Length: 490
Image 1 (cartoon, one colour):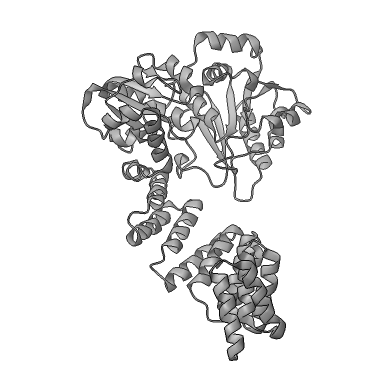
Image 2 (cartoon, one colour; image 1 turned 180 degrees about the vertical axis):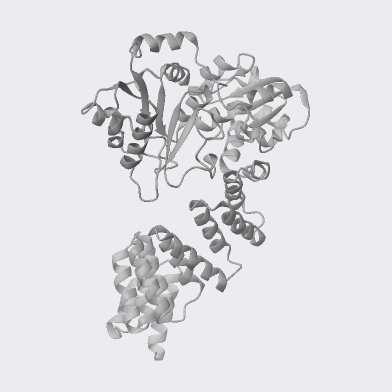
C-alpha cells in the first residue's frame, strides 16, 4: 500500500469509525475502483453494509474479501451476516470451512455453537461451545450460552455447572442468577432455587409499579423478609401471569397465619375468584385509593415461598382443591352448556405469545378428540388465538365457552362442570389443577421448569397429567397418543 493509498484508507476508516457511513462508503469504493483486490477494504465495506442491515451487499463484499484472503476474521464476519439474516445453515457451513481452512480462535467456535443451536444441531452446538471455552475458559458469554443450551436440553445439572462458572467470572449478573434458579427448580431444589429466583426481572418491575401506585406508603413500608409480622398488615401483589398467581395462591392460607391482616392485589381478572375463595383476605381491585389503604410490609407474590422459608416438600403444599367455584356459577353453566349425558371436554390451544410461541398448538391437532364416542367438545380459548375457533367449528360439533368468561370466577364455574380439560401450558391448566379437576397439559419438547424432570406425574396438582411433545413429534401425533389413552381409560 503506497503512501497515497494508505492516506485514503486511513481517511475512509476514520469516517467509518466516526459513524459517517455515507462518506466512508464513498471513500471505500474509490479505493476499490483503483484496487479491486484490496481485501481489507472489501471486508470493511461489507461490515459497513452489515451495520445498515444490508445483508446482501455485506455478503457480496465480505465474500470477495475471502476470495483474496482466507482470513479467519473475514469468515467470522461473513458468518455474522448469515446469523443476522437467520440463515443458520449457511453460517454453519462457512464457519466449518473456516475451521478446515485456517487457524481459528475463540470467536469462530462461539459463533459456530450459536449457529448450530439455532440450526437444531444441539450436540454439535455443545461441542463448539466446549471448544470455545477450551480456548478462553473465562468467557462469560460462552459459559452462559452453553448453560442455556443445557437448560434447553433438559440437562439442569450441567446448566447449573456452567451458570455457576458464569458467576465466578461475574458474581453480580442478575440474568445468570435468575436462570440458575430455573436450573435448581427443574431438579426440585427449591430451597436453593428460590433464593436465586429473587433476581427475576418481573419482581423488580412489580416493586417499581407499587412505588408508582402507593408512593407514600411504600416509603414507610419495607419489603417483608420473613420476620415476625403477627401484629402487622401485609400487602402482596401480582407479577407475571395468571397461571403463576393461581399456582401460588396455595400459599395464601400460610400468609394469613403469619400476619394480622392480609391485603392481596391480583390481576383484575382474578380478583373475584380470590374473593370467593379467601373471604378473610382483603382482595384489592387494580387501583385502590392510597388514602384509604394502609399496610406495614409488602412483598411481590412470587417471593412468598422464599420468604416463608418453605423446604423442598412444603413447596408443593395443597396439591388440589384449594380453589372452588361458587354454586350460582356452577348452576349457570350446568343449565346453559352442560345439561347432557356426554363426557364433556374443554380444549385450549394458545396462551400469551408475547413470552413464548412454542406452547401454541395448531387447532387441527384436536381432530382425534372428535372421534371419541359419547364426547362433547367445548372451546375455552380466550383472547389471542380465539379466531382459530372457526376452523374447528366449520368441521366439528364444538361449543364456544369463552364468550361467557367475564373473569376467572366464571371460568371456574365452567370448569367444575367439565369432565376433562385438555390444553397447552396455560392458566386454564393451573385453574383446573387448583380445583382438582382432571386435566391433561400438552407440553412442548422444551417445557417450563415447573414440570420438573419426571413428567410421569405432576408435583403441583394431583388431578393433572402431563403429555410432552417428542423431539420430532407433531402436535397431531401427540394428540393421537392422548386420544388413545382416553379410549383405554374409558
